[in-house]
Image 1 (tube, rainbow, N blue to C red):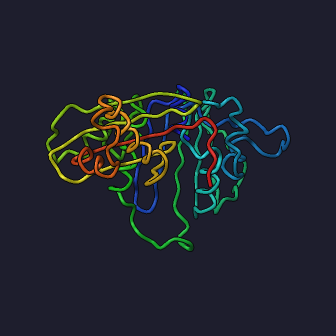
Image 2: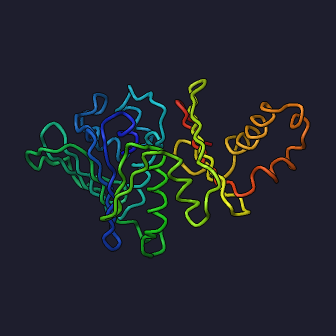
Image 3: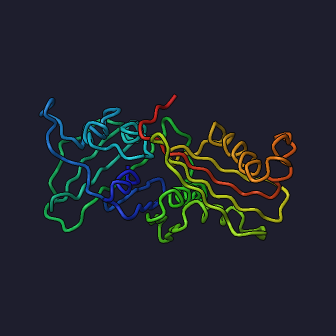
Length: 277
């Protein structure tokens, strides 16, 4: 949700802070609205978003950007799986807060007074009657935040006191993935939008023998799919277009064995109206 806020031009950072079993996610976006829901005056938009699936598209009907979130699923699902969750909102010059237990509001939205900032902070503790108690994996969270930063070049992501920004987008991610292998050429970045599908590709060839690919759909990791198959087909097609007489009839598997040696590649596909299956 914070990343979607950034894509709308509202948030400049996402901060994750870990404190024992508890974790918080903070942004400086516009803040989730706390107005009453017209069709259910007993609820605020904040409570609707935090407790009802697909509510995100209700409170953001104008949100038609090429986007990366779960579109109204994430907050309610996380809330239901949390022993305790506190949502804080800074909006319209006020500071609001509402608490939940296993997805159920513990009381109405409270007005905590005036505020100078805007944004949203979610603080939660997982429900350990469902999950095995364990510490948060900082390495996993740091990797995910770097992926998000690479897909949003003007966004700053922060884990505790460490900030990361990727102004070159997926190229910065490819460089990080290849950090232990010397590059044999400058990285290649390809971007484009067609039929409401935005694609960004970063290619970096190194001295290593193995191939490393990382694919994303809407910024979410997708280890296989048409986006990665399309990468292989596109490489062959691009080289064949350069010299069709020599490469037009080359076996794709043989070509891939040669051209993909030492390749570090990252592909992100953004959809206007995604469907999850």
